[in-house]
Image 1 (spheres, rainbow, N blue to C red):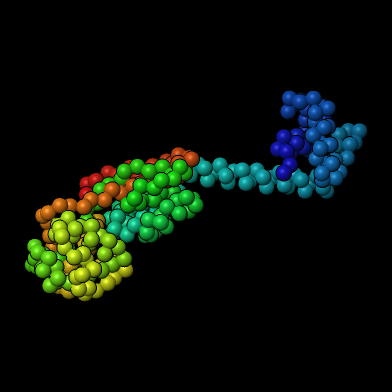
Image 2 (image 1 turned 45 degrees about the vertical axis):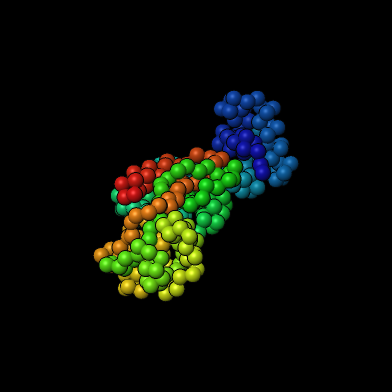
Length: 292
């Protein structure tokens, strides 16, 4: 890597046409200008011819001037990218679990629609992938259902999300035998969620695995479709239930003890969020709180 001060001296020397004028404009001694040139020529070869009336740039010197111009362009590009860190322009990446993702993605699109300079990149992923993606700087922000224990991650409470027992509209699930009659619609986190909630609602039960399983879906947006068709019940986070289009075809069984998960907003702890990322966080906090 060539010393930037040497390059600046060479550019000024080529522009001024003499060591004396270059030294004056740079506030250096002629000896310092000569030393900088010598350092460059030791690495790159002859850069200037010294003439009685000034200097003449060699082909190698012209190539170095082109290199200096390229550095200037790269510097402007970098400054431009950093300038894009405004609150209403540039890209923001956010990765989240499916349930909260269904709630926030339309909000992110609303924000992008209001600020066309903003580009939103969102991905649905399980907790482990969310954490890994933020650690690797692939995403600015992440949402987790468990608070991470990692010094490189800053985590703040974002929202709370209850688990819900969802049945077909008009059905009932007041007893364990009601659940057995309906049958369970499973999903990737279904058994774990069902055991957590049902253990509180129906103490002493045999566990969700003892219930007949009437279906399975790994698509967060489709888990409630078989429930809406009367094929069984499920346990699902509230944001996923609220995102389902056919609310009239399902029913949430209230009553009994609840299970509420805390959602954590994470980002890299070593540096502050960009203004646009802060804008996204503030917007989501405001609107998600209104829908919680």
